[in-house]
Length: 104
Image (cartoon, rainbow, N blue to C red; front, side, top):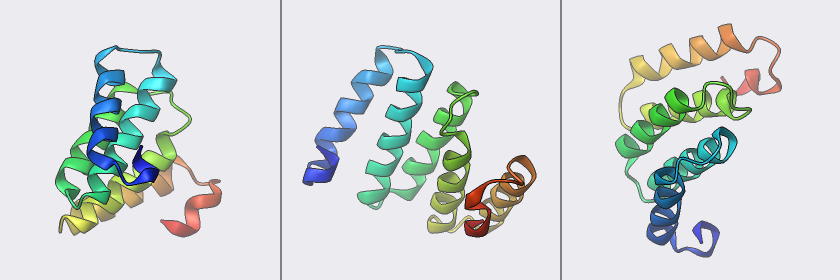
């Protein structure tokens, strides 16, 4: 849906998955994709808020490192530069061997 330009419908789809309280990996992916939908709609604050929920609910997700980077990006777009920099510093500390370190 999201890649077909039907972003609001994708948000509703991911909301339903989250409400179902699926297993952690599916829940993490739903939060991650929903945050991206809000980002695409220009609602950076909502994207950041959804990413916070993803990080809280999916402690062991393989998406966690990528989510921290996206969260920092959303914070930056919403004008919260100090918070964004703090998240990037956390990423560097938590994932020193990440191939995405250059992006931080």
